[in-house]
Length: 459
Image (tube, rainbow, N blue to C red):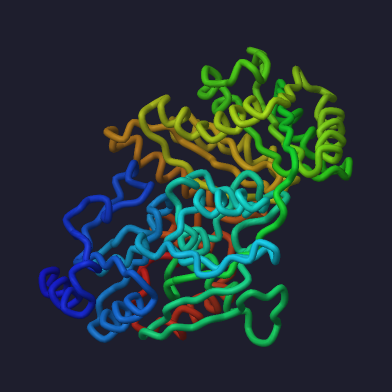
């Protein structure tokens, strides 16, 4: 079957639009550490929207599954071609279709990488705020498909907040456009928001109009260390209660802090060995506003803190955020592997959730820790494992199910930013009622009646 599929798509689209299905990079995404991979029947590398449309139309007519793929940086297995099918990778669709810096807007194709968009905006005095961790690898289409977040989502919101229009290819092979270079649009059902976060299960985003904002003049992080989870979470609530709006509010628990301690930039100040919790915030805006907010953050965080660090030199600020970006790698290095889930809970339940992660790990004989976007109540709850230990992997999978149940019990969600993909399939019932699930499934059935768009994902 694979040879026949590839042969027919090659005849339809041309040699340049066909990738090597035997190349393992198309078999997996960032969940490869969990052993999740599958070989596709064919790989399509479209150069434009028309080639995407033609590929989707052919697949739909021949009952072949379609697996959209961005940069492969996802943590939920959403880009893995489970059961085969045709991977449609948008790597070649990187064109900037229109850029109006004076109007703070840009239209780009879905394959443009996040860091390239941010660079282009920055060179014109603007900012595209969403900052997912893999900005050098992730693509805008994938960010939109998962509604990706990042540390600065607290102030600026997730990717969807910055999307004003979409072009997408929908089953059975139709190009639609919703929104555009608009600030407002309430004419019909919010189809744009339906596609945002749909993980390729309803269609393939091929281009987007994005809203930009003037880049802040300055940024100043403020990090505080505490002796307990309770003290750290109380400080987070004081920050919010003070009325100050930081750009980011991050946290690390004791295990995450311990793993990343050796990489801590010395210019940020010595880390207290007794610290069991860190709150990392940032002020941004004009120089005067940044200085004022940073002072207010230091005051709000100081009560009960073991130490407060507030580097100001641009190089030191960048080093601190590079350190934060490397926490996941540092944690993985402790055992050579990890299983990490991105649950989110209401902020007033954050301390309870952080402590519960450790309790769940202990019940399954697993070392556990967490870090994440505290201002959003978003935990990267993590169980450390040796991937070669099948029993440990099984225990981690069982622990993840408990984690999903915990999120539902606390009024939260089983995914704050990574999506459901394949890894979390079947767990939406932890947070949704049967009636809500029925509406969710009805939308999928109406748009993709053959269930060929990324089948098995987002369920």
